[in-house]
Amino acid sequence: MKALILSKRVAELAHERQGMSGGRLIIVWGGFDFALLAGGLAATSAAALVRSNLAKTDAQKTEQILDRLAFDDSIATIAGLTIGIMTLIGFLISISAQVAADNKTRILRLRAFGYYLVALIVSTIIAGVIVWLQTLRPADEIELRWPGLNAASQKELETAFACSASQSKIQSCLEPIAAAVTTRLGFAFTALHAFSGVQLMLWLLTAALIVQLQDRERARRIDARQAAEAQYKL
Image (cartoon, rainbow, N blue to C red; front, side):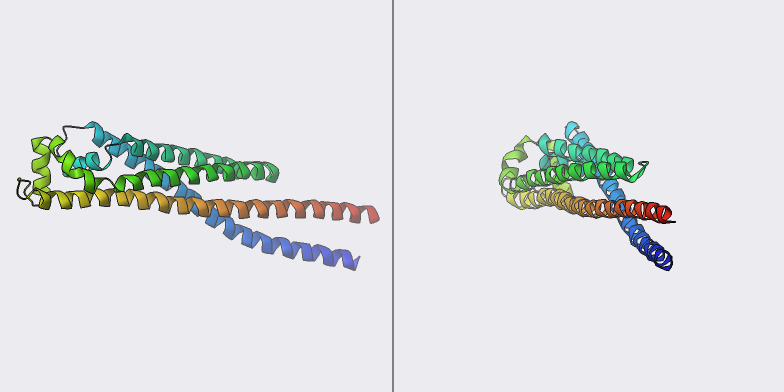
């Protein structure tokens, strides 16, 4: 009888310790999950804004002109929108896992979320590579694309970069513009790969959470069996 009481007490202490570590894990997991949501909203908003600027071919603001020079190929913005929408869908899957009625369903949904995260990570890296390839273009192409800008756009960029695009000084004007375009693309590239890091961390935390839930479910079954055996002996 004393042995039974002692084993029950040990099990209670183990569950308390597991609950404390589990609480910390779920908090960290939740933080990264909301970081995923924030990143998805940011990617969707940024891609939508850039696509809007690309559509405004007569817009003369410096930011809009630079967007047209940096992201003239719609593939990059489509990739950004795709990543954003995929991320929002992934967040909904993660929430559905947390509101599941039992551990078994929660584990299954978390596994589905884990597989979805793998697809999202790969997609984000591919989008980053697409943007990176575009960073190789501006310095070589800006001189060819400059004549394609209307006079008002050229004047706006000359004013913004305090330079003159006259025939004798055109190179001194195009170089800072090309650098600004490259910086714009580089920021998008860095943001995408930083976001893939958040996704990877969330995937690792999801795997840890699945293991923890499996251990908890296993411990619950063992406790139930031990309780049934103890009841039978009594």
